[in-house]
Image (cartoon, rainbow, N blue to C red; front, side, top):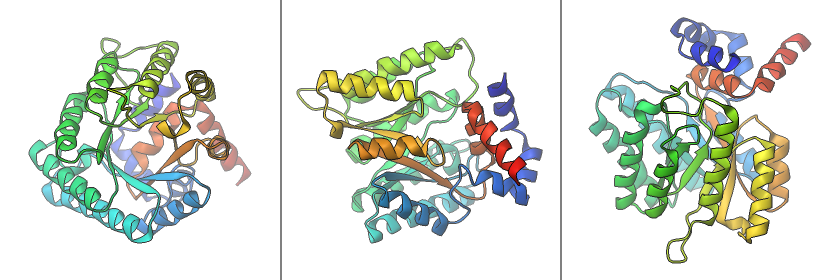
Length: 309
């Protein structure tokens, strides 16, 4: 019930406009959003890197409506890729297709993302094409495949464990050596295409992460991201890789900025690869509401902070 309510609120244009302009909204968003500017994001990246944790930088924004807006979004990513290279940061970037024109011109979106991946290739970096709701799933995977054929190892995407189709999609991408970020999923989906029960989503997630960690094509594995804050799943992964003698270098745990920092630091101290997704920007509202939908503890944390104020 709470999850559905916050997902619905994430789509409210009026509440979004008010929240993104209000001082209290910006204060609350600071729990999960690194700031409003590129420099805010880079400063957060430097801090996280000093803790032995890699970063994926995400300039927040989605559903642009013109080529000018799409190109403006892309320019920020090129700025981030330049900064990553110039400063030697342990970081890459993550981009949503709807923020580069996918909704009105898929060919434009592919050209723009292709330019980003080409830049990442020259800068010895990586672009993660983020996943949105199910209407984007096939187009996102197909675009990733085409770009990965041009720039092997420089582009990957995200799969969501709550979708029935994800097991087949994982096999499809692994066979091509394409890196996957596996998450549970943060959008409202129909029971015709997605597991409605959390227990089923969790079970599918564990099955898929084990497959990804042990996948081999003629002795070659695929480095993938296990994106979860669920400590039971993290412990299941740790136990599994010990039992199967999977090296810690074969995968990474991925978590979000402001969520389970204690767990991130503990895993990094134990020698696991850990990557923190660091989002920033003025268009933070939809992202923020999806974080509240994912985890009720986040709501309690924010309420406690408000009461302290």
